[in-house]
Length: 191
Image (cartoon, rainbow, N blue to C red; front, side):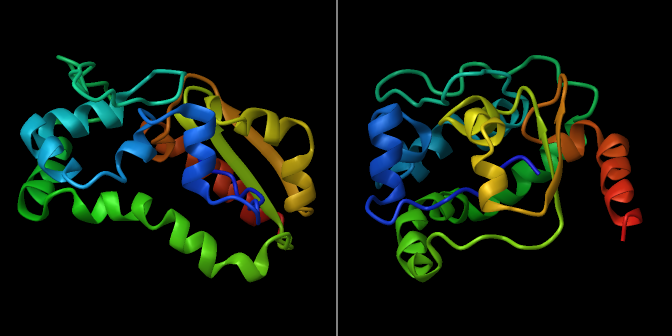
């Protein structure tokens, strides 16, 4: 769901690719910077999480230096996200900070190095892919084209259905849990 498995470029590290495609203000590039934890803590976990969970932008997510990040925080949460849920997540980030989450992005180049031996390998298991049409990943970095021009199917040859859910963002399992469960159930019933 949400993020397709894509081919790794054996000649260029992911952060170099992200910088070349999207510039230094691209969120993954900015997350590489020391001190991002403090910047996010200053903005506040509630604002960061509400903005991230409810974002409906279709361009690359940017965090311009010196500008107010996460300005799009909604006053009213969408029906699929309760204040209680947000408060739960906020309590965890207030306790631990953002380092754990940022480290996922900071390790992309290391993961690229560690998985280099599998560059060009195919995923050869039956698969189904589900994504929201408002998902930032689907709308940036050429992923839409990757999925539509058969590159995705070359990498995942037993890929069956690709489902693009209308009106849904990155957190489709929370936004439309019944519909996502139905897609999973239908997939499992085939086997």
